[in-house]
Length: 99
Image: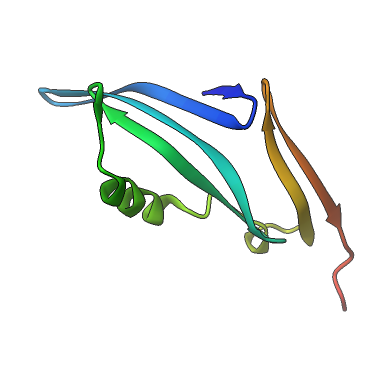
């Protein structure tokens, strides 16, 4: 994973039996609400061939959300999330749980 300004680049190779697939994915994070972060894929390449947008959307529909604060033990409210050169910058608050 390479983190650039406003963009994440994920690449690698998957081998299953006789099949080998090189993949390259670029995209950015998007804050849906204060609890949910999804990854928006701009481009997906498999063996250097571009994958059609409807296929990319179907794949990421299964992967997203990449982070759901409702599933953590923290009562986390995310205000902003940005990809910067080398890191992900997140602004959030942790609130006490109501008894």
